[in-house]
Image 1: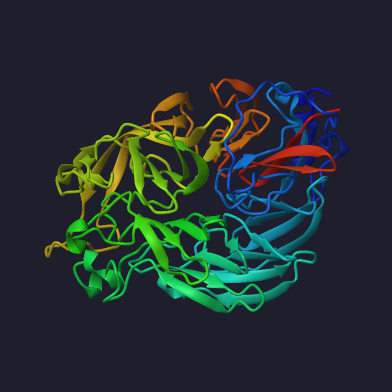
Image 2: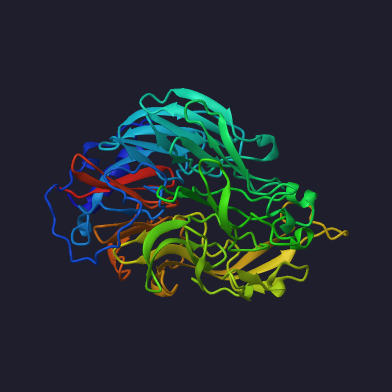
Length: 541
């Protein structure tokens, strides 16, 4: 059966389906199980964190954030035959997270909702629903540990469910939603703790990261991203009032190195967002990468990609962990493509700065300081008369997860470049009336998928997205493939070394989450959500 006929039959099945019924038999395709000889590959450097294998057990597949899978049944020689295996509709509920697959079961989320699905057939096993009045912007997924799944809610609760039945085990409050706290981030399992942070950007509130006991839901420790009086970093704020309204939300799941026993989380922007004059200083620990002891919640080191941010360009983007050579020496590395348009490489054991480069054109900074941190140009900050900035208003990238492929040694990120106009909106006393204090309008936007050489920060290849924005993440595999998508519904596989298109399909709706892959019964699958439907692909017989 041709790919177009499969899509037509599946589309008809979805259009006439009752709630959560598995699609017709035409949507279930077997995968070739025979061994396949792959093209010659560069031998990857040994990594201190194991690559993703048959299962996808956490938000990024493993705790490194690389989103690289060792599966290779689907590869550059046969990906052209990839076809739809099954699809799971959520009936109008947007899926913006990455599903997990553990022991043959897929766990999928949307705000207020979670499903368990047979990962081989797409049959629903259970559904959980808990309506709330909080912010429903997104839910990035669940965490899994010892037969239980954990997820955050729009009203800032942490929920524990029995993985087999979907029955709720416990429900604890993370933060008070009356103050506009909510939880969009997928929790992270680190040893015997569930780690999750607060989200929110609608009011001037300080945020925090917390670790919970997986059995009881009790708080083990809490790390405030805005330091209190007398704590290190408090001196980077002008006064106590500014700290109490400081911001620093957590939007994207962190990463973890078990050998170093260090977690790495990126934090969000300070408040008020654009009115920097009322919060003079670097404003720690906003727009920062934090290296954290998971046993105590103490900060071991930090690095701030955007000191004193005045453009809402936070640094929550995934801190990606890998081992590799740098300047002729083997290093434990952390790479970060930040929303401000700069690419950073650090030694993750010590926080030592190794490299800073621009991954898209931007002119908001007038140079770099001794630590490789951009120095903001006052002429490019918001003001009453406005300022033109060579960068898009939304930032040069966002929450969409990047990937690092140890076979190519390249870092991949979806970025945006263009121009924007920034203005301030202050009262007669020079104070902002809301948490923004101004705004921005993007004048020109161009989305590109970029491959970067982490040793130099230079671009190796780019794939323009045309008129489409890209809000999808990136997945690379040992089959010498890169998967991603765009807001016009295009899903594609590329050669990660060159950017050449090897396969393309179009579910026809906005792709705004991270693709993932898993293997079940000797068959490899690739999954990606488009709007309110999860599509799962495999090789036909």
